[in-house]
Amino acid sequence: MGVDVVGVVLGAGRSSRFGTPKQLLPFGDTTMLGQVVRNANASTLDRVVVVLGRASVELRNTLDFGRATVVENTAYGAGCASSLLAGMDAAGEDCEALAMLLGDQPGVRAEFIDSVLSEWRLRRPWAAVTSYDGELGHPFVFAREAFEDLRGLHGDKAAWKLIEAYPERVRRIEVEAPLPPDVDTPEDYELALARWRSGA
Image 1 (cartoon, rainbow, N blue to C red):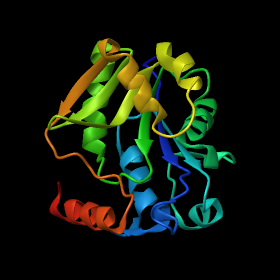
Image 2: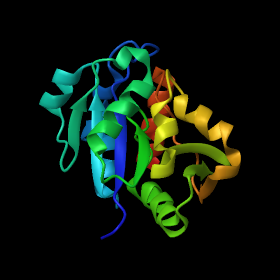
Image 3: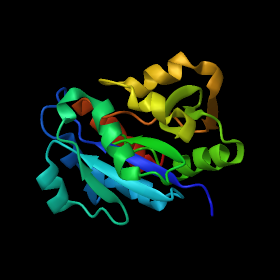
Image 4: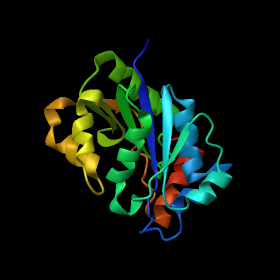
């Protein structure tokens, strides 16, 4: 039996900088979160878990989650670490590695996810990060040996703190593409749409 790598899509954000629930923003023939979920489902991840918080009812009513399992994070106001915990709980004891994906980063295409997963599966490092032409981004992949550290995280940008704390244990996996933007502002949204249309 192969290694069970579970993708956790963090889609519970408050959208505090954007204002409206950015997960519901139109993106192609779906929404922004819908595209992130579609990318994850199209990848070689063994399983996909989507964590919802703000706008959960609207998202459940409008998105096709496909093969993904959907869970709620009622504590999403405490930061993304709480959503990661909810995703880890849903991933269960059979999970050998966790791939973190952001619900506001629709430009992380399935082929990018697969590039990182294939390299991680080959070498099984404690953690791996994606390097887009030298700029670090998601997905992050954490082996089971890192789970205890992940469960000790709090607040926002928590996984970054772990990556920065143990650089010798983290493998950078190169992807020849520009870093997909996090959508935090209307300008980010326009950039993400333009990149997607151009195939970048």
